[in-house]
Image 1 (cartoon, helix red, strand yellow):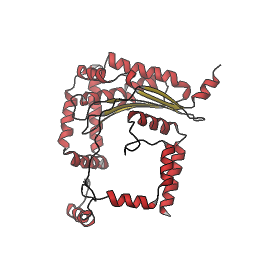
Image 2: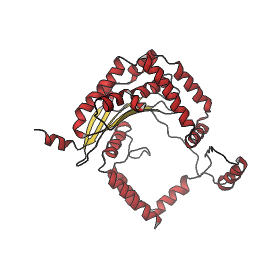
Image 3: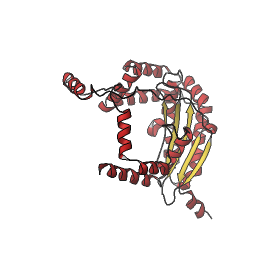
Image 4: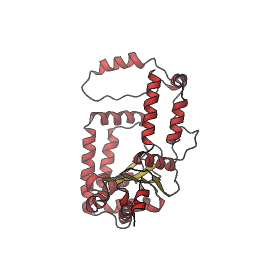
Length: 312
């Protein structure tokens, strides 16, 4: 009964996503950025494939998977807050010490893959909002020499909320988007990273938004950032990191991941020092080295047909 209830909830969620601009655009982008074969566990299913898989799944298969893979032999834990460490350790030992994994842990390695550039349009009839996504894969991890410059460069380009280049131009100056920004993520181990940009907008603003987006990327690549922007970004980025570390859940997650990576908070201190030492010239060179609108995968989802029909 519980299994069937969960199945119904999952299928209902998938059905709802099948017509949502954000969900469809995100799925298409991921399938193009990482086009794994179906037998690979990282393969991104279509909503149709996901629904079919859940419909065909049996409770016996779920139990068998649990018995074959689940265990605490390689588990790590980090706890932040006001607690009795001896009491917690005793509870952990009592509940998890004997729970051995049935097979050894093996990490899935990520290799850098440069996807084919593309511009994809997905129709979502009768949806008032459209979704714009653009992304580019980059060959670096968090220990790469160019990582700090790329991190701060993205903060100025689209990661700094309303003060970023993309938000200033597209949202504040031209009023083309309800929300716009960019994110940069690099793997902690493998040399593979992704830069992504997003915008939520009215479908009739599609052409103007794409034009403004491309112009801002090209401006960063050709002209770069000013010394004033860089100094303000350093202060803003470090402040955001300090606020993040003050959140117990975020800090616990970081500490737990560092147990697996063999890192400590000294790594964060080192990154902040590298950020502080960056010059505008270094950042501008790195942004020009990696970002290229012609290499990006762009996905747009919205009711564009209605806009075309309304044109005289």
